[in-house]
Image (cartoon, rainbow, N blue to C red; front, side, top):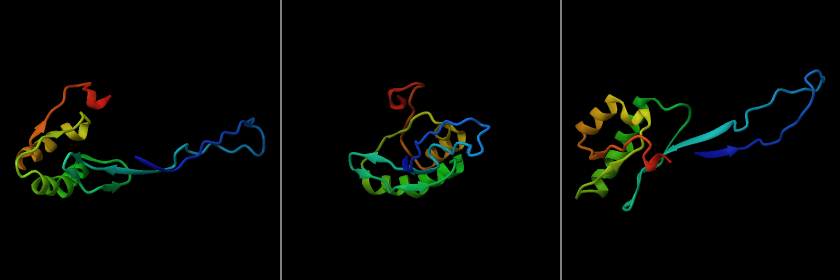
Length: 114
């Protein structure tokens, strides 16, 4: 995640003061990224905003991961992801199986999540 703007200024006033202003969000703008990294290079970067749904995740895999695997890993691959819900949904598992992605599931609280 890349933060575009950070507001760390804090002001303390009584609420009854006529200049009281409600605090703004600490990090109002965020740029969310998805990218796959391997010893043979990286996938194209996918930039998105808002909350990613499972269907969005599958679309990202379809548009970014699949072409990269077919180009860079003709001799085989292993995909390792953390246990985020989008990674473990049945629709994601079906997509991985149907596209012959060699996914290695990680145990709960695996080092990849620390």
